Amino acid sequence: MSAEVIYGSELAQSMRDEMKEEVVKLREQGIVPGLTVILIGEDPASKSYVRGKQKASDYVGVDSDLMTLPESTTEEELLSLIKKLNEQETVHGILVQLPLPKHINEEKIIEAISPEKDVDGFHPINIGRMMTGKDTFFPCTPFGIIQMLKSKNIEIAGKHAVVIGRSNIVGKPVGQLLLNENATVTYCHSKTNNMKDYIASADILIVAVGIEHFINGDFIKEGAVVIDVGVNRTAEGTLTGDVNFDSAKEKASYITPVPKGVGPMTITMLLHNTIKSAKIAHGVYNG
Ligand SMILES: NC(=O)C1=CN([C@@H]2O[C@H](COP(=O)(O)OP(=O)(O)OC[C@H]3O[C@@H](n4cnc5c(N)ncnc54)[C@H](OP(=O)(O)O)[C@@H]3O)[C@@H](O)[C@H]2O)C=CC1
Ligand SMILES: Nc1nc(=O)c2c([nH]1)NC[C@@H]1CN(c3ccc(C(=O)N[C@@H](CCC(=O)O)C(=O)O)cc3)C=[N+]21
Image 1 (cartoon, rainbow, N blue to C red):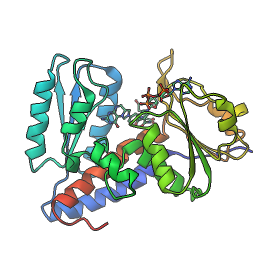
Image 2: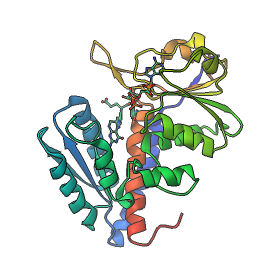
Image 3: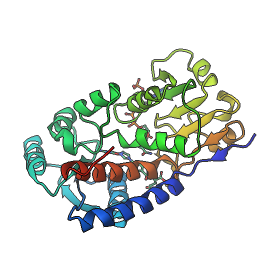
Image 4: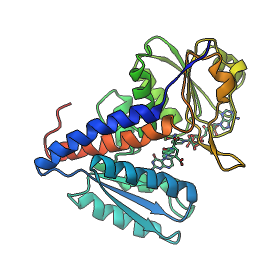
C-alpha cells in the first residue's frame, strides 16, 4: 500500500480562506480580532515560527502585534506586560512563545494569561475544561491534528490511538482530544517498556518526540494513520519530522509530511482561537 498524504498546508489554506471571509464580516460589525505575540530572546527557530504566525494573521485579517523583548527581560516585567494585555480590550489573544529563558518560570507565565485570552489553550483552566469535555480554546497543534483526521473522514471512535510523547503542549492534549472523540488512547514516552508492541498495534499513531527518523515503516501496522508532529532541523538545514516518511508511506493508509503537515495547521488553529475569542468578547459567538 502507498499511503495518501494529508497536506496540512492545503487544509490550512482552505480554512484560512474561510476565516478571511468571516473576518471581513466581523470587521463590518466593528469587531477586529487582535492577537499579541510575545517573543523573548533571539532563538532563530522561534523567530521563524513567529514570522509564520504574522504572515497568516495578515492574510486572514487578524490584527497581530509582535512584541520582541530582550533575553534579559525579567519575570516581573513579563508578568506586568501580561497583566496590561489582559486588560486591553483590543487584544483577544495572547501568545507567549515557548520555551522561555531559564530565569522565567513558564508555569507562572501561562497561569498569568487570562483564560479568556489563552488562545494557545495552555492555561490549566482551559486544559481542565478540555478534559471534562467542555468547549474551550483547544491547544493548537492537537486541535489541528483532529481537523486533519476529520478532513479525510478518518474514523477515530473505537480506534487504538498511540501517542508517542507526553508534553503539555502536544502529547498530553492530543491524547485527550482523541479520547474525547472516543478513541482508545495509549501514551508512550521515554520510560515506556516494549514501545514497539504499542506502536505495532496503533490504528492511529501520533509521533511527537523531536528525534529525526524515530519511527520507520517496519514498526507500524499495515494501514495505520501516521501523524508526524516532529519538526527537526537536519545537518543540511532542512526540516524533517520524527517519521521516516518514505518507508512509513509504504505501510500506512494516511500519513502527514514535514514540512507542510501539522505545522501549518497549528498556526491556523491559533487564528481560529483568536477569532473565536473576539466573537466571545463581543457576544456574537454561537457555538
Ligand atoms: N508542528 C508543530 O506545530 C509543532 C511541532 N512540535 C515538534 O514536536 C516535537 C515534540 O515537541 P514537544 O512535545 O514540545 O517536545 P518535548 O521535548 O517537550 O517532549 C518530547 C516527548 O518525547 C518523549 N521522548 C523523548 N525521547 C523518547 C524516546 N526515546 N522514546 C519515547 N519517547 C521519547 C519525551 O518523554 P519524557 O516525557 O519521558 O521525557 C517527551 O514526552 C518537536 O520536534 C517539536 O519541534 C512541537 C510543537 C508544535
Ligand atoms: N506558545 C507557543 N505556542 C506554540 O504553538 C508554539 C510555541 N509556543 N513554541 C514552539 C512551537 C512550535 N510551533 C510550530 C508552529 C508552526 C510550525 C510550522 O508552520 N512549520 C512549517 C515549516 C515552517 C518553516 O519552514 O520553518 C511546516 O511544518 O510546514 C512549526 C512549529 C509552535 N509552537
